[in-house]
Amino acid sequence: MKFLNSFYIQPRFFYAGIAIVLLFALSYFVPLLFNLAQLCILVLAVLFLLDVLVIFIGKQRIEAQRKVPDKFSNGDTNNITLHLKSNYPFLVYLHIIDELPEQFQRRDFKLKAKLAPNAKKSLHYAVIPKDRGEYHFGILNVYATSVLQLVAKRYKLDQEVMVPTYPGFKQLKKYELLNINKNAIEYGLKKVRRLGHTMEFEQIKDYVLGDDLRTINWKATAKKNQLMVNQFQDEKSQPVYALIDKGRIMKMPFEGLSLLDYAINATLVLSNVILKKQDKAGLLSFSKTIDNVVVAQRRSGQMQLILEALYNVNTDYFESDFGKLYANIKRHITHRSLLLMYTNFETLDGLNRQLPYLKAIAKSHVLVVIFFKNTALHTLIDTKAETVQAVYDKVIAEKFDYEKRLIVNALKKVGIYAILTTPEQLTIDTLNTYLEIKSRGLL
Image (tube, rainbow, N blue to C red; front, side):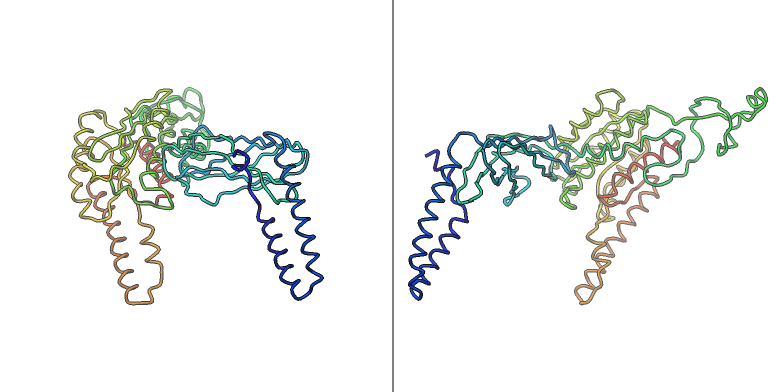
Protein backbone atom coordinates (compact mmCIF):
# COMPACT_ATOMS: atom_id res chain seq x y z
CA MET A 1 0.00 0.00 0.00
CA LYS A 2 2.88 2.33 0.81
CA PHE A 3 4.31 1.60 -2.63
CA LEU A 4 1.02 2.55 -4.35
CA ASN A 5 0.79 5.82 -2.40
CA SER A 6 4.15 6.93 -3.79
CA PHE A 7 3.72 5.47 -7.31
CA TYR A 8 2.76 7.91 -10.09
CA ILE A 9 2.61 7.16 -13.82
CA GLN A 10 3.93 10.10 -15.80
CA PRO A 11 2.27 11.71 -18.86
CA ARG A 12 5.08 10.44 -21.12
CA PHE A 13 3.85 6.85 -20.59
CA PHE A 14 0.35 7.80 -21.76
CA TYR A 15 1.69 9.74 -24.74
CA ALA A 16 3.63 6.62 -25.78
CA GLY A 17 0.50 4.51 -25.31
CA ILE A 18 -1.54 6.87 -27.50
CA ALA A 19 1.14 6.69 -30.19
CA ILE A 20 1.00 2.86 -30.13
CA VAL A 21 -2.82 2.91 -30.38
CA LEU A 22 -2.56 5.18 -33.42
CA LEU A 23 0.02 2.80 -34.85
CA PHE A 24 -2.43 -0.10 -34.47
CA ALA A 25 -5.13 1.99 -36.16
CA LEU A 26 -2.85 2.74 -39.09
CA SER A 27 -1.95 -0.97 -39.37
CA TYR A 28 -5.53 -1.57 -40.58
CA PHE A 29 -4.53 0.24 -43.76
CA VAL A 30 -0.82 -0.73 -43.73
CA PRO A 31 -0.52 -4.31 -42.36
CA LEU A 32 3.26 -4.05 -41.99
CA LEU A 33 2.76 -1.56 -39.11
CA PHE A 34 1.00 -4.23 -37.01
CA ASN A 35 4.23 -6.04 -36.11
CA LEU A 36 5.92 -2.69 -35.38
CA ALA A 37 3.09 -1.75 -33.02
CA GLN A 38 3.46 -5.06 -31.16
CA LEU A 39 7.20 -4.46 -30.81
CA CYS A 40 6.55 -0.98 -29.45
CA ILE A 41 4.25 -2.43 -26.77
CA LEU A 42 6.99 -4.83 -25.70
CA VAL A 43 9.64 -2.07 -25.61
CA LEU A 44 7.33 0.24 -23.62
CA ALA A 45 6.59 -2.51 -21.09
CA VAL A 46 10.31 -3.30 -20.63
CA LEU A 47 11.24 0.38 -20.21
CA PHE A 48 8.35 0.87 -17.80
CA LEU A 49 9.47 -2.00 -15.55
CA LEU A 50 13.08 -0.84 -15.76
CA ASP A 51 12.07 2.68 -14.76
CA VAL A 52 10.12 1.35 -11.78
CA LEU A 53 13.10 -0.67 -10.61
CA VAL A 54 15.69 2.11 -10.80
CA ILE A 55 13.43 4.71 -9.16
CA PHE A 56 11.96 2.61 -6.35
CA ILE A 57 14.91 0.45 -5.28
CA GLY A 58 16.42 1.92 -2.12
CA LYS A 59 15.01 4.05 0.69
CA GLN A 60 15.05 7.80 1.11
CA ARG A 61 16.95 8.50 -2.07
CA ILE A 62 15.83 12.14 -1.97
CA GLU A 63 16.33 14.45 1.02
CA ALA A 64 14.80 17.93 1.21
CA GLN A 65 14.55 20.67 3.79
CA ARG A 66 12.61 23.92 3.76
CA LYS A 67 14.28 26.95 5.34
CA VAL A 68 11.89 29.74 6.30
CA PRO A 69 12.46 32.98 8.25
CA ASP A 70 11.51 33.16 11.92
CA LYS A 71 8.81 35.64 10.91
CA PHE A 72 7.45 37.20 7.74
CA SER A 73 7.31 40.93 7.02
CA ASN A 74 3.80 41.91 5.96
CA GLY A 75 3.56 43.41 2.48
CA ASP A 76 7.23 42.70 1.72
CA THR A 77 9.04 40.02 -0.26
CA ASN A 78 10.12 37.13 1.98
CA ASN A 79 12.52 34.51 0.65
CA ILE A 80 12.23 30.76 1.24
CA THR A 81 14.96 28.24 0.45
CA LEU A 82 14.63 24.53 -0.34
CA HIS A 83 17.75 22.41 0.19
CA LEU A 84 17.72 19.21 -1.93
CA LYS A 85 20.01 16.21 -1.92
CA SER A 86 19.97 13.20 -4.28
CA ASN A 87 21.27 9.79 -3.23
CA TYR A 88 20.55 8.26 -6.65
CA PRO A 89 23.58 7.06 -8.66
CA PHE A 90 22.16 8.66 -11.82
CA LEU A 91 20.65 11.92 -13.01
CA VAL A 92 17.13 12.53 -11.64
CA TYR A 93 14.47 15.09 -12.51
CA LEU A 94 12.49 16.57 -9.63
CA HIS A 95 9.07 18.22 -9.44
CA ILE A 96 8.59 19.95 -6.09
CA ILE A 97 5.16 20.91 -4.79
CA ASP A 98 5.28 22.87 -1.55
CA GLU A 99 2.01 23.10 0.38
CA LEU A 100 1.85 26.87 0.91
CA PRO A 101 -0.31 28.51 3.60
CA GLU A 102 -3.95 28.98 2.65
CA GLN A 103 -3.59 32.77 2.80
CA PHE A 104 -1.62 32.74 -0.46
CA GLN A 105 -4.36 30.85 -2.33
CA ARG A 106 -1.81 29.20 -4.64
CA ARG A 107 -2.97 25.93 -6.19
CA ASP A 108 -0.52 25.84 -9.10
CA PHE A 109 2.76 26.24 -7.24
CA LYS A 110 5.46 23.93 -8.63
CA LEU A 111 9.24 24.00 -8.89
CA LYS A 112 11.43 21.93 -11.20
CA ALA A 113 15.04 20.85 -10.82
CA LYS A 114 17.47 18.18 -11.92
CA LEU A 115 20.19 16.69 -9.76
CA ALA A 116 23.36 14.95 -10.81
CA PRO A 117 24.31 11.68 -9.07
CA ASN A 118 24.71 12.20 -5.30
CA ALA A 119 24.48 15.96 -5.75
CA LYS A 120 23.04 18.81 -3.66
CA LYS A 121 21.12 21.86 -4.81
CA SER A 122 19.24 24.81 -3.34
CA LEU A 123 16.10 26.38 -4.81
CA HIS A 124 14.70 29.75 -3.86
CA TYR A 125 11.26 31.29 -4.14
CA ALA A 126 9.56 34.33 -2.63
CA VAL A 127 6.19 34.99 -1.03
CA ILE A 128 4.45 38.30 -0.24
CA PRO A 129 1.99 38.01 2.66
CA LYS A 130 -0.91 40.45 2.68
CA ASP A 131 -2.30 39.78 6.16
CA ARG A 132 -0.80 39.58 9.61
CA GLY A 133 -1.21 36.34 11.55
CA GLU A 134 -0.07 32.73 11.49
CA TYR A 135 0.95 31.13 8.19
CA HIS A 136 1.00 27.32 8.24
CA PHE A 137 3.16 25.49 5.71
CA GLY A 138 2.20 21.90 4.97
CA ILE A 139 4.09 18.93 3.60
CA LEU A 140 6.90 19.22 1.08
CA ASN A 141 6.20 16.87 -1.85
CA VAL A 142 9.07 15.85 -4.15
CA TYR A 143 8.42 13.71 -7.26
CA ALA A 144 11.56 12.00 -8.62
CA THR A 145 11.88 10.57 -12.14
CA SER A 146 14.71 9.10 -14.15
CA VAL A 147 15.74 10.13 -17.67
CA LEU A 148 12.94 7.90 -19.05
CA GLN A 149 10.30 9.88 -17.08
CA LEU A 150 7.71 7.09 -17.32
CA VAL A 151 7.04 6.77 -13.57
CA ALA A 152 7.69 9.01 -10.58
CA LYS A 153 8.24 8.27 -6.94
CA ARG A 154 6.69 10.67 -4.47
CA TYR A 155 8.73 11.62 -1.41
CA LYS A 156 6.39 13.04 1.20
CA LEU A 157 8.62 15.02 3.55
CA ASP A 158 7.14 16.21 6.82
CA GLN A 159 8.08 19.89 6.85
CA GLU A 160 5.01 21.39 8.53
CA VAL A 161 5.83 24.70 10.17
CA MET A 162 4.07 27.87 11.32
CA VAL A 163 5.54 31.29 10.52
CA PRO A 164 4.02 34.39 12.14
CA THR A 165 3.61 37.44 9.90
CA TYR A 166 4.45 40.71 11.63
CA PRO A 167 4.04 44.29 10.41
CA GLY A 168 6.49 45.28 7.66
CA PHE A 169 9.70 45.33 9.72
CA LYS A 170 11.81 45.05 6.55
CA GLN A 171 10.96 48.67 5.82
CA LEU A 172 12.97 49.69 8.88
CA LYS A 173 16.21 49.22 6.94
CA LYS A 174 14.79 51.12 3.99
CA TYR A 175 14.26 54.20 6.14
CA GLU A 176 17.33 53.75 8.33
CA LEU A 177 19.06 56.67 6.60
CA LEU A 178 16.39 59.00 7.93
CA ASN A 179 18.20 58.89 11.26
CA ILE A 180 20.34 61.72 9.99
CA ASN A 181 22.70 64.21 11.57
CA LYS A 182 20.88 66.54 13.95
CA ASN A 183 22.13 69.62 12.07
CA ALA A 184 21.17 68.38 8.61
CA ILE A 185 18.42 70.12 6.68
CA GLU A 186 17.22 67.27 4.54
CA TYR A 187 14.46 65.13 5.97
CA GLY A 188 12.82 62.12 4.42
CA LEU A 189 12.88 62.31 0.67
CA LYS A 190 12.46 66.05 0.34
CA LYS A 191 13.92 69.18 1.88
CA VAL A 192 12.01 70.75 4.77
CA ARG A 193 12.68 74.33 5.67
CA ARG A 194 14.10 74.61 9.15
CA LEU A 195 12.52 77.50 11.03
CA GLY A 196 13.92 79.12 14.17
CA HIS A 197 15.90 77.31 16.83
CA THR A 198 15.10 75.06 19.70
CA MET A 199 16.13 76.23 23.16
CA GLU A 200 18.30 73.20 23.97
CA PHE A 201 21.88 74.50 23.82
CA GLU A 202 24.58 72.01 22.81
CA GLN A 203 27.95 73.76 22.35
CA ILE A 204 29.90 76.75 21.01
CA LYS A 205 31.84 75.99 17.83
CA ASP A 206 33.87 77.75 15.15
CA TYR A 207 31.86 79.51 12.48
CA VAL A 208 31.84 77.79 9.10
CA LEU A 209 30.33 78.99 5.85
CA GLY A 210 26.59 78.33 5.91
CA ASP A 211 26.01 78.78 9.65
CA ASP A 212 23.17 81.09 10.62
CA LEU A 213 24.58 84.53 11.41
CA ARG A 214 21.94 84.97 14.12
CA THR A 215 23.66 82.30 16.18
CA ILE A 216 26.98 84.19 16.47
CA ASN A 217 28.16 84.35 20.08
CA TRP A 218 29.77 87.79 20.26
CA LYS A 219 31.35 87.33 23.69
CA ALA A 220 33.06 84.10 22.60
CA THR A 221 34.04 85.79 19.32
CA ALA A 222 35.76 88.66 21.16
CA LYS A 223 37.55 86.26 23.49
CA LYS A 224 38.84 83.95 20.70
CA ASN A 225 39.33 86.74 18.16
CA GLN A 226 37.44 84.67 15.55
CA LEU A 227 33.80 84.08 14.76
CA MET A 228 32.12 81.60 17.11
CA VAL A 229 28.51 80.41 16.94
CA ASN A 230 26.11 78.73 19.33
CA GLN A 231 24.98 75.28 18.29
CA PHE A 232 21.54 74.06 19.31
CA GLN A 233 19.98 70.63 19.09
CA ASP A 234 16.45 69.38 18.73
CA GLU A 235 14.63 68.89 22.01
CA LYS A 236 14.55 65.25 23.03
CA SER A 237 12.41 62.84 25.03
CA GLN A 238 9.15 64.20 23.67
CA PRO A 239 6.24 61.72 23.64
CA VAL A 240 4.87 60.75 20.23
CA TYR A 241 1.81 58.50 19.95
CA ALA A 242 0.36 56.72 16.94
CA LEU A 243 -3.44 56.50 17.17
CA ILE A 244 -4.63 53.76 14.81
CA ASP A 245 -8.28 53.62 13.85
CA LYS A 246 -9.21 49.94 13.49
CA GLY A 247 -12.87 50.54 12.60
CA ARG A 248 -14.53 49.23 9.47
CA ILE A 249 -13.48 52.23 7.37
CA MET A 250 -9.86 51.02 7.63
CA LYS A 251 -10.64 47.64 6.06
CA MET A 252 -10.67 49.16 2.56
CA PRO A 253 -8.10 47.30 0.40
CA PHE A 254 -5.35 48.80 -1.73
CA GLU A 255 -3.09 46.51 -3.78
CA GLY A 256 -3.78 43.56 -1.49
CA LEU A 257 -3.17 45.32 1.83
CA SER A 258 -5.88 47.02 3.87
CA LEU A 259 -5.57 50.66 4.93
CA LEU A 260 -5.16 49.35 8.48
CA ASP A 261 -2.07 47.36 7.48
CA TYR A 262 -0.58 50.36 5.69
CA ALA A 263 -1.09 52.40 8.89
CA ILE A 264 0.49 49.63 10.98
CA ASN A 265 3.55 49.38 8.71
CA ALA A 266 3.98 53.17 8.74
CA THR A 267 3.70 53.21 12.54
CA LEU A 268 6.45 50.63 12.90
CA VAL A 269 8.85 52.59 10.68
CA LEU A 270 7.99 55.88 12.35
CA SER A 271 8.43 54.44 15.85
CA ASN A 272 11.93 53.34 14.91
CA VAL A 273 12.84 56.83 13.69
CA ILE A 274 11.24 58.42 16.78
CA LEU A 275 13.36 56.33 19.13
CA LYS A 276 16.52 57.06 17.12
CA LYS A 277 15.68 60.76 17.42
CA GLN A 278 15.74 60.26 21.20
CA ASP A 279 11.99 60.81 21.53
CA LYS A 280 9.47 58.53 23.24
CA ALA A 281 7.32 56.30 21.01
CA GLY A 282 3.94 54.88 21.95
CA LEU A 283 0.71 53.77 20.35
CA LEU A 284 -2.89 52.75 20.85
CA SER A 285 -5.63 51.43 18.60
CA PHE A 286 -9.26 52.45 18.88
CA SER A 287 -12.71 51.53 17.65
CA LYS A 288 -15.52 50.82 20.09
CA THR A 289 -12.80 50.15 22.66
CA ILE A 290 -9.21 51.27 23.25
CA ASP A 291 -6.74 48.42 22.76
CA ASN A 292 -3.08 47.60 22.15
CA VAL A 293 -1.85 50.43 24.35
CA VAL A 294 1.91 50.97 24.57
CA VAL A 295 2.90 53.89 26.81
CA ALA A 296 5.37 56.26 25.17
CA GLN A 297 8.81 55.40 26.50
CA ARG A 298 12.41 55.35 25.30
CA ARG A 299 13.92 52.10 26.49
CA SER A 300 15.77 49.16 25.03
CA GLY A 301 12.74 46.88 24.59
CA GLN A 302 10.31 49.52 23.33
CA MET A 303 10.47 48.51 19.66
CA GLN A 304 9.70 44.89 20.53
CA LEU A 305 6.69 46.00 22.61
CA ILE A 306 5.44 48.12 19.71
CA LEU A 307 6.00 45.28 17.21
CA GLU A 308 4.01 42.82 19.35
CA ALA A 309 1.19 45.33 19.88
CA LEU A 310 0.95 46.07 16.15
CA TYR A 311 0.89 42.34 15.40
CA ASN A 312 -2.30 42.06 17.48
CA VAL A 313 -4.17 45.01 15.94
CA ASN A 314 -7.19 43.78 13.99
CA THR A 315 -10.27 45.50 12.66
CA ASP A 316 -13.55 44.71 14.40
CA TYR A 317 -15.82 46.27 11.73
CA PHE A 318 -17.47 48.62 14.27
CA GLU A 319 -18.00 52.36 13.99
CA SER A 320 -15.09 54.08 15.72
CA ASP A 321 -15.93 55.94 18.93
CA PHE A 322 -13.91 59.18 18.89
CA GLY A 323 -15.60 60.29 22.13
CA LYS A 324 -14.16 57.30 23.98
CA LEU A 325 -10.77 58.01 22.36
CA TYR A 326 -10.85 61.61 23.65
CA ALA A 327 -11.75 60.47 27.16
CA ASN A 328 -8.92 57.94 27.19
CA ILE A 329 -6.36 60.48 25.94
CA LYS A 330 -7.47 63.05 28.53
CA ARG A 331 -7.16 60.49 31.32
CA HIS A 332 -3.92 58.73 30.36
CA ILE A 333 -1.83 61.06 28.17
CA THR A 334 -1.25 63.91 30.60
CA HIS A 335 1.86 65.46 29.00
CA ARG A 336 1.66 67.50 25.81
CA SER A 337 2.40 65.02 23.01
CA LEU A 338 2.46 64.67 19.26
CA LEU A 339 -0.50 62.49 18.25
CA LEU A 340 -0.47 60.95 14.77
CA MET A 341 -3.98 59.69 14.06
CA TYR A 342 -4.42 57.20 11.21
CA THR A 343 -8.03 57.17 10.10
CA ASN A 344 -10.13 57.85 7.01
CA PHE A 345 -12.90 60.29 6.14
CA GLU A 346 -14.78 59.96 2.87
CA THR A 347 -17.25 62.83 3.33
CA LEU A 348 -17.35 66.21 5.05
CA ASP A 349 -20.37 65.07 7.07
CA GLY A 350 -18.30 62.16 8.39
CA LEU A 351 -15.64 64.61 9.58
CA ASN A 352 -18.16 67.05 11.12
CA ARG A 353 -19.54 64.29 13.35
CA GLN A 354 -16.08 63.75 14.87
CA LEU A 355 -14.70 67.29 14.65
CA PRO A 356 -15.70 68.36 18.21
CA TYR A 357 -13.65 65.49 19.66
CA LEU A 358 -10.69 66.25 17.38
CA LYS A 359 -10.75 69.91 18.42
CA ALA A 360 -10.86 68.91 22.08
CA ILE A 361 -7.82 66.64 21.64
CA ALA A 362 -5.93 69.37 19.74
CA LYS A 363 -6.33 71.80 22.66
CA SER A 364 -3.88 69.81 24.79
CA HIS A 365 -1.75 68.09 22.14
CA VAL A 366 -0.31 68.54 18.66
CA LEU A 367 -2.74 66.48 16.56
CA VAL A 368 -2.00 65.28 13.04
CA VAL A 369 -4.89 63.56 11.24
CA ILE A 370 -3.72 61.24 8.47
CA PHE A 371 -6.26 59.95 5.97
CA PHE A 372 -6.20 58.51 2.50
CA LYS A 373 -6.84 59.51 -1.09
CA ASN A 374 -9.14 57.22 -3.00
CA THR A 375 -6.85 56.18 -5.86
CA ALA A 376 -9.74 54.51 -7.69
CA LEU A 377 -11.44 57.91 -7.96
CA HIS A 378 -8.33 59.45 -9.51
CA THR A 379 -8.20 56.66 -12.06
CA LEU A 380 -11.84 57.35 -12.95
CA ILE A 381 -11.25 61.11 -13.14
CA ASP A 382 -8.26 60.70 -15.46
CA THR A 383 -10.19 58.37 -17.78
CA LYS A 384 -11.80 60.00 -20.79
CA ALA A 385 -15.60 59.78 -20.59
CA GLU A 386 -17.12 58.47 -23.81
CA THR A 387 -20.67 57.68 -22.69
CA VAL A 388 -23.34 59.52 -20.71
CA GLN A 389 -22.97 57.06 -17.85
CA ALA A 390 -19.21 57.62 -17.84
CA VAL A 391 -19.77 61.38 -17.61
CA TYR A 392 -22.06 60.91 -14.59
CA ASP A 393 -19.49 58.63 -12.94
CA LYS A 394 -16.70 61.11 -13.58
CA VAL A 395 -18.66 64.03 -12.13
CA ILE A 396 -19.48 62.06 -8.98
CA ALA A 397 -15.82 61.01 -8.63
CA GLU A 398 -14.70 64.64 -8.93
CA LYS A 399 -17.23 65.60 -6.26
CA PHE A 400 -15.86 63.05 -3.80
CA ASP A 401 -12.27 64.08 -4.61
CA TYR A 402 -13.13 67.74 -4.04
CA GLU A 403 -14.75 66.81 -0.72
CA LYS A 404 -11.47 65.23 0.42
CA ARG A 405 -9.74 68.57 -0.14
CA LEU A 406 -12.51 70.33 1.80
CA ILE A 407 -11.83 67.97 4.72
CA VAL A 408 -8.16 69.04 4.74
CA ASN A 409 -9.15 72.71 4.77
CA ALA A 410 -11.71 72.14 7.54
CA LEU A 411 -9.07 70.54 9.76
CA LYS A 412 -6.49 73.26 9.09
CA LYS A 413 -9.03 75.97 9.97
CA VAL A 414 -9.31 74.64 13.53
CA GLY A 415 -5.53 74.24 13.95
CA ILE A 416 -5.26 70.53 13.25
CA TYR A 417 -2.53 69.28 10.94
CA ALA A 418 -3.83 67.11 8.11
CA ILE A 419 -2.11 64.71 5.74
CA LEU A 420 -4.03 63.52 2.69
CA THR A 421 -1.92 60.84 1.07
CA THR A 422 -1.99 57.64 -0.92
CA PRO A 423 -1.30 54.36 0.91
CA GLU A 424 2.00 53.90 -0.92
CA GLN A 425 3.23 57.36 0.14
CA LEU A 426 1.90 57.12 3.69
CA THR A 427 5.17 56.29 5.43
CA ILE A 428 7.32 58.99 3.88
CA ASP A 429 4.63 61.69 4.18
CA THR A 430 4.15 60.88 7.87
CA LEU A 431 7.90 60.89 8.50
CA ASN A 432 8.32 64.27 6.80
CA THR A 433 5.51 65.76 8.89
CA TYR A 434 7.00 64.44 12.15
CA LEU A 435 10.46 65.78 11.31
CA GLU A 436 9.06 69.13 10.19
CA ILE A 437 7.11 69.54 13.43
CA LYS A 438 10.30 68.83 15.36
CA SER A 439 12.33 71.28 13.30
CA ARG A 440 9.73 74.01 13.86
CA GLY A 441 9.76 73.41 17.61
CA LEU A 442 5.97 73.09 17.70
CA LEU A 443 5.84 70.27 20.21
